[in-house]
Length: 114
Length: 113
Image (cartoon, rainbow over all chains, first blue to last red; front, top):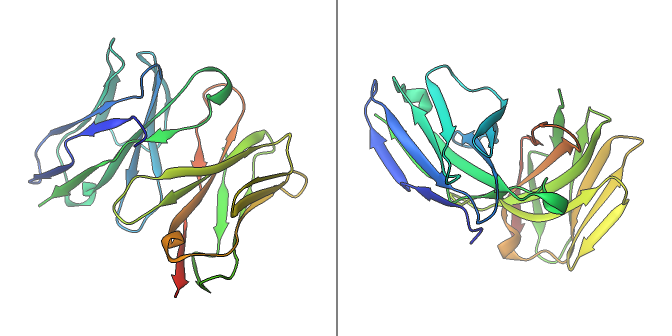
């Protein structure tokens, strides 16, 4: 167990819908990263938040948005869902200081768009 | 930006033999190189990492080597066991700013009993 939690575990929805994925980082970690992993694919970086501020963006679609709240949990919002958005979505957190580059992954949310 | 290439994409080895996975990176500013293991449907788990001030690091049956001049690093697993079967990802990251962790495309390792 990495200490990073994600809810829900599974999400099944229809095309055109909107969903919210939630992530709670490890205690004390200020950074949260979101990744998308499609079937048998690698990890595609979406976005990085640090202490409530957006720090870096990857290949994140305009239909997707994220935020990090004062209690440091983060939400990834996916709207106008398409079949191709079906994937595993992981968040990861990293500590400050010496180990700041190490990312600890949550269990993921499996999104299925029908 | 950083580009990480990983080879091979699939690897099968007999139980007890060694497995080697290789990665190359493009950005000379990268100096943090982790390796993650991902079992089917599970989260990626950090198994070992290395920083550029070190050429090799070992942890029991796992070792990572780094050649900064050639910009490549490798994962070595010795005395492989069935539970080593998984997908392995390498990654690279510069030690400054908000640069992201760039992942390789993964290697599916299968240990044959």
